[in-house]
Length: 430
Ligand code: HSE
Image (tube, rainbow, N blue to C red):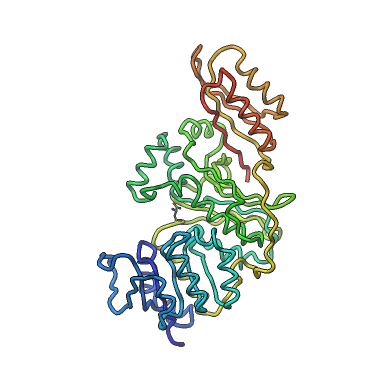
């Protein structure tokens, strides 16, 4: 067997510790699959003294993570610090510039600087691998880049944030409000103390930007995404969606449409019969549609030590074997630069929930706006009876354009009998 492949690992949090544990626990099997042993020789983390439940003796320790790139005993840099700027970016750039392959779990970095990093990796002829950056343990990158390489992809969609999926699932199953479930998710350690990246859809957007670039051979373009999170999803809407036969999920969807690729992250109503509708709790799912293969759905754990380490080690085994794919599936010169489609061009059906005063003529006013905007209704439902007070009214539309819907919504919100900002959730038949 060949000499060991030596790693420098930056970041010894949950994921970093998980990678060291997996490499040690499955060392023989991994060596057999890689054709050579894979060993950690150097590490970098903020706090030397913290007990991580791991033996770190014998490993070189660098206080400055970027020093791993210059450490002569390090063959591959494994970046598990996170963040689109700062030491993570500096380390990845330094490692690639030094001609060292990089394995990273850093979706923010790739979604923000993936274009420039791919060019650098290509110039230097080294691998930049990121299986762990999207959907944790689900081999979504490998599936798209290698497994489905013969397909023209029409759509990639997924549940890409476990924290949001956990919150929406608990709200549905227990009828609890968003804030209460978020607090519980934080207590359980699912959501960050500052959970904005998760619940505002940013984390899912980073992952979708990566999937879209790979699926459609495009320059990664986070700025092209439409992003909405789950803060405004109410327990009432989840219950009403259930009555109509839908579950509400935060989805990331990238699809090829006439005129370009549309990329969006927002809460969606998914029919309960769809496999994605029943991927619950912290689980992630990725759905791909290809012209030859049809539909492929993968699901699994999107975060955590074991699943993320599983993805990191898969990249390491690839590099050890000499498998080296272009970062975005095609060479950077071949990447399509066509701008993404604006959200205003999206077409679909919509769920609207209004709180309206229970008095004569209100529905006529609302449907009058929809008539004027040429939006056709599929169904309508009113709950409760409270003369002169607010009651919920639900409207489900046929397919229309987002721009039409936005104009209609602002006119409906301005009606004197509509007492709250209307709730709008897009329906995705997938
Ligand atoms: N915070 C992410 C999630 C996990 O909740 O899915 C890491 O990407």
